[in-house]
Image (cartoon, rainbow, N blue to C red; front, side, top):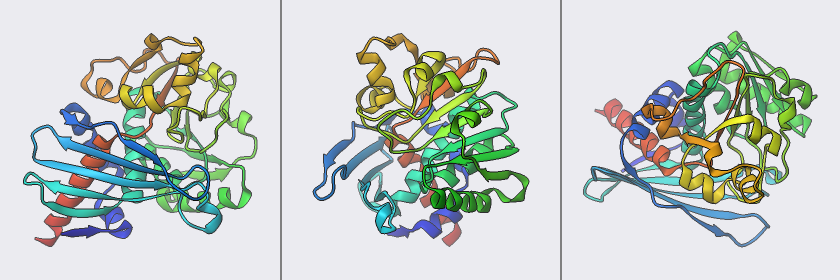
Length: 317
């Protein structure tokens, strides 16, 4: 059985390879039952998630077990941890992969894939909101889709913002300017792509500050009672989601305005699979605002795990 830790996965997988794998995965049928979310004992907000997925042809399956412990950063540990088990067509477990790394890399790749359809072709200014471990992966994935001239990073804690800047510079090299920003509203008026990966419960992205033509990427919250963007941001945007099933059960940014009648179901223009297959039109004009809301899909974990295992086996052959 393969054991692929963080170091192995970062060597085996690149954003371009993952984006290509996800493009293929969303174009092919996959069976991904709703994930189970359980409250874990201990500090408030702790969760245990179970996410299965099966290739429709029956030649592979995965189960991801993930913990979300919001109190971990205060102890110097990641918020999200876990493991992905990959099974063969015969039901044999063939690999165990570091779940946190798979989650970070596939989440970033899915966002970049969506941005490839939704962001302006000339987008070069990326704003990262949030300073968790996902931030550098998001910057690296978006940079794989189109050249970025500048990446701005905003967060509430100075030390964590500075650490995220260092980690992002290591990912992107010297070709892209990466810097700390303090005035979020001012930066929102400048950014071509706004990527938010936070655990906030109250919106921190005011839609009225978004510039015409901006693309908004929301990946931080996956709970009905959490929001990263306000009503104005949702109403002003052409909205897409990773999956309707996930968004309509877990995405507070979508569910809250739906419940209050701010938007209707028709405001959601399509899933990521619709964009990939050409069933939905992404950006229709340069000055419109687009928005992609992701809560995560086991289809992405299956694609990433299969790719990593195949590349590891090729290298060992």
